[in-house]
Image (tube, rainbow, N blue to C red; front, side, top):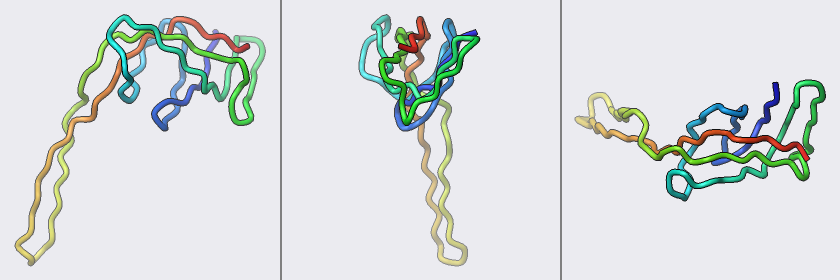
Length: 105
């Protein structure tokens, strides 16, 4: 089973063909193909390749499925005895992509 560790949006994700990932927001419409060139680690089932820091010539192709917003988190700031309380909500945007192919170069 082949897989790769890719870096996008300052985070690392394990990509496998056919798998869907929720990654930080990318530019593009649903159905658009995207390519990830920052491949840190890869395996095709029998051999393992490690990048220093990335693999040269390796890429992961994916298709954008949808854009959306994650679950709401509550940010609550409080200072005791100071009559200060601040409540704020936030929903982080995401892009859901389906991994199509992995090429280790």
